[in-house]
Length: 310
Image 1 (cartoon, one colour):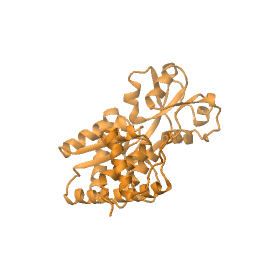
Image 2 (spheres, one colour):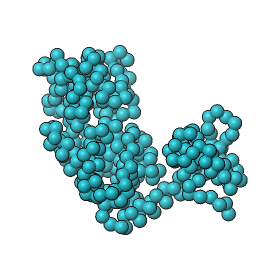
Image 3 (cartoon, helix red, strand yellow):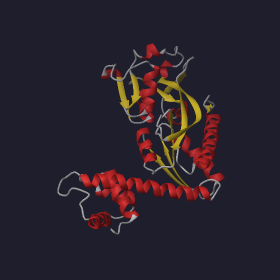
Image 4 (cartoon, helix red, strand yellow):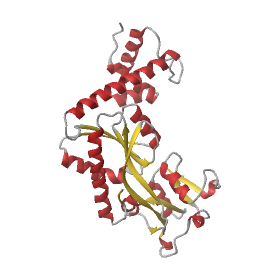
């Protein structure tokens, strides 16, 4: 019987995920030589190569692809066992792995982390900020306990809970302050600044303007990787943009821009929490959802905006 270890499985999975020995070693908090030695020992125990050798790009062998798929099932089961143990101890979980989308994380997390700290001193909190598809993948692989995303996600394996809704606002140059707020049809005729493809907020903004992906000339759509960059681009006179209301206070404080609210029906989004339906932490995660709602309400009260619980 091969003398394989869970640690080796995690090292192999990290190597596949990062595609690079150095980055995988950093993620696992070990040296690159140590990771390489453990991966080699893993292959020697199996007696069959898991990775192809000699190429510049890291590749799995056909056998390795099957090993990694089965290994992920084992790691997911172990994570669920750990979650079951955490849930059995009662109260709020002592360790929580949260994923958050980039258009929520910088604004909601400071208050949320503070609220969780007040309720459960010493909670071991791990936060991951990335795009929704990646969060869904990592939830499915058992590397996250929950994620805060824009709904719906419509993933059959995940439970969804609404947290709050918030409006989008128009950010335009300061000299446009007081002018009529453009309609969605008028926005289609303007230079619209958007987040790059992959962000759900981009798709939501395009939907409000009734713009299909790829239907506008490249010169009329300028992309950025963050809301902060979008607002600074407006300040520089490059166009106009939409941002979620929770971002207004942070992103406009150092920019000479004007913020305008749309009339009805105004664009908005629903933010919610998702987790695996099989997660043994589900009862505690419902409690966490209440904490997130309170943090969002405190943020709303601090900004004076209409963002509120669903």
